[in-house]
Image 1 (cartoon, rainbow, N blue to C red):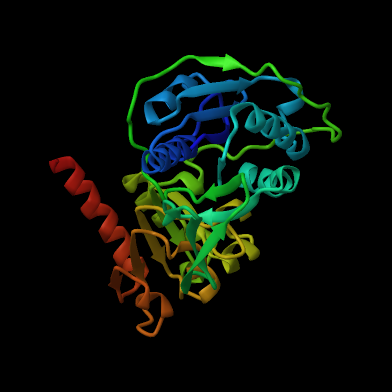
Image 2: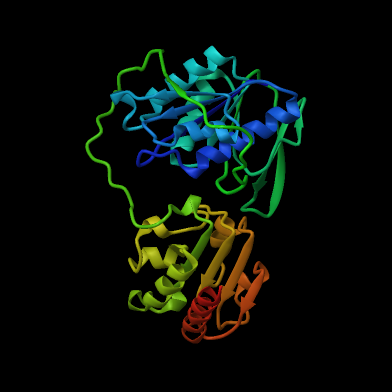
Length: 321
C-alpha cells in the first residue's frame, strides 16, 4: 500500500505529530505487506530527515511563500498533486489545526472517503476499516471506507513514535503551487510550553481554584512534572486563563500520558476532551464530583493542601533519583 503522510513544520522543526503519522503509516504498510511511505512536509525543518527514522521511505519538502500561511486551498492542491504522483492509496494527517483544515477539502478534491480523529491502527485493510470514539467518548464506532483513496486524521498521542529505519535526505517539491488567494497579515504563536495536543503531561485547573491569583501552586506542580498547563471552560470564559489552555469537547482534545485535574468537577463536555488520557489524577474536595468515576487515581481533599504537598514530594523524589 502506498501511503502519503502530510505535516507542517513549526519553528523550523517537524513536530512530534509528524513522527506519529510516520509510525502509523509504517505499521499499516507492514500489515499490508509492503508499499512506499512518502512524507510531504510544508516549510523548513532542521530535523526533516528524521522522518526516515520513523518509517518514511521518501521525503518531499515544500518551501514556497504561497504555503507559508498553510492556506488550506493551496496546501490541499499540493497534497492532491503529490498523492497522484505517488499513487497514494492512503493519506494520513494529524488531527490538529492544519490537518483538520485540509482534510475536508482534500476529501472532496480526490473523491476520497475521510475518517477524522482515529486513535488506532485499522482493524481491517480489505475492506479498509478504522475505529474512533463517538458520542463524546462513550462508545467506539467502526468506519469502513471503500473509495480508491482513503484519508484519515490521527489523534495526537494515540500512536507512540517508534524508530524503524535511518534518516534520509529530503527532495524539493517540483510540482505547481497555486497562488494564495487569502492574505496573511500576522501570525501569533503561543510560546513557553509544549502545545497541549503534543504534551505528555498536563496539569489542569477548574473553578475550584477560586481565582487566577491562586494559579501559582498549579504552575509550580506543572514545572516539576514538565507539564503543560490547561483549564476547564468556565475558567477560560471567566478570563482567569487564556482560551488556548481550554481543554474539553469545545476546546482542545488531549491524550497525554498523565492528566492531573485540580478543582474540576468533570462535566461530560470536559471529560469528552480528556478521557483518552492514559492516567487521570483527580484532586477535588467534593466526593460526588463526576470526575472521580473516570479517574485512575482520586484524592478527595482540599486542593490547597494537596497540591503544594504533592509538589514538594515530587521535588524530594527527583532530588533522590
